[in-house]
Length: 315
Image 1 (cartoon, rainbow, N blue to C red):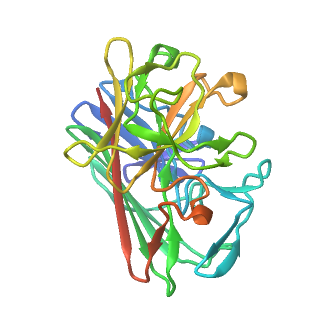
Image 2 (cartoon, rainbow, N blue to C red; image 1 turned 180 degrees about the horizontal axis):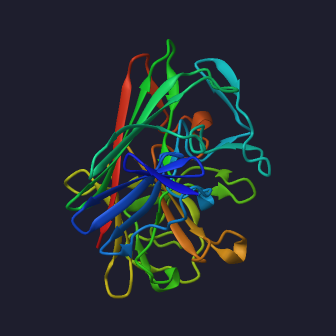
């Protein structure tokens, strides 16, 4: 059952906020501050699902205060051991943070912008209070998403963030599209637990080299990429294109030094409902298991605020 309240659509307790600018239209939901829909002139640039239903494969959701996985849910920070709840039992990991299944509070909703916030309180193995905000805003070039994280506690806190963004080139099947990534290295993962094994490796001349556009036909990825090279404006751009050249471009600022690229494949039991194969390009501040490796882990001092941004537009 759906109802409209103060410009927001509510379904099964989840609110959806619409924003528009020119030919761009987007919908953002309260659950996980998720991007439910982005399109231009009716042509979809993201995968979508009905309001109120669980986002398939965590599509569009904010992943914080860590993205991806923490091995055995265990880490040591500032000399203190922490045991998080195991949220991926099959692999014995703590996955995707603490806020993707919670409803965020609406702070602002205008015709072009939605700002939501949530407080990360005390959880099993997590004694660090944080205040998070996420702002989705449409402009002439598409969507800009700005995230902040403030340490509102009395101790330094570890932090990382990611977003499970599924992109698409209209209705073109993924196998007919090409992908270009501005990334020079990839981090090898243990395929049993999807955790890092070894150091980052160069992608050049390998099956993971997407520095020039490559067909996605038959390609399966669940891979963290780094060594991301920004353009002169400070933004790094990754492109998914249909054969006619149209498609989607996802950009990240310098705070997001990683992207996880994931192909949902129905033959592997991971198909996107109604779409089959689908592609996620996930901005991340750090790689999987960063709270143990320390790689690109952010440390927020009491009272300190971190800010990062990414965006998505049409090609």
